[in-house]
Image (tube, rainbow, N blue to C red; front, side, top):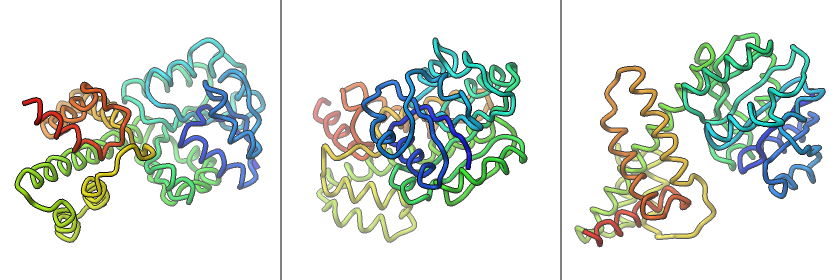
Length: 295
């Protein structure tokens, strides 16, 4: 069994750590807010006070944090991962959804110190992680994938190897952008049905059984029809917007059109601007209602 250092015990990191522990791996964990790490301590992880401490004695170091800023802090900040001394054999794995530019820069920082960097974002929500059903978008050498496979398979059902470092993150941003576009389109369609006097439950059922019935359409139109609010947050609007903005930077770098993505991002930006950024993405319909009221 492997000795694993893990930084980030939020909704996703917590579940992944619990899966690793259940598989018999030894985990040392760090989270900026210690109280949010108590669940993994109870499950058997050892908690430490700085990101760099997870490196000591580790064969693998995983990171799962919110955004570029958090990633920079835990890797390069005071007491960060790269401030610690570690065997050159350790593999360092970034599972967060980050900007493509930062992933390439971070890879350079890690490899310059003699370590192996692996680009390994995941797709799916914490409930999928609990079932071991995440999808993994891997960027790095095949030998690193094979070394990691026993651990990755504890919390995933499919591993995609997209190529070198950066390819995993590039695909994850494109993948998430497709989700951003679909959720924004569903919210606009549902609020227009409402304005036209169409029953939202009937509208959601119609969307679900037709060619429009992607998983995003089915789940989000049903939630919008039910009108549930203040539910546990599965994917916050701020996260949707962050992913879309990272993707737009990648599209610009690739010199490709981004009109659909720009339009979808602007919808979520409106939601953030009116103070709803911490809500579930399905509550975009409420933001559109509020915007319509304001004229």
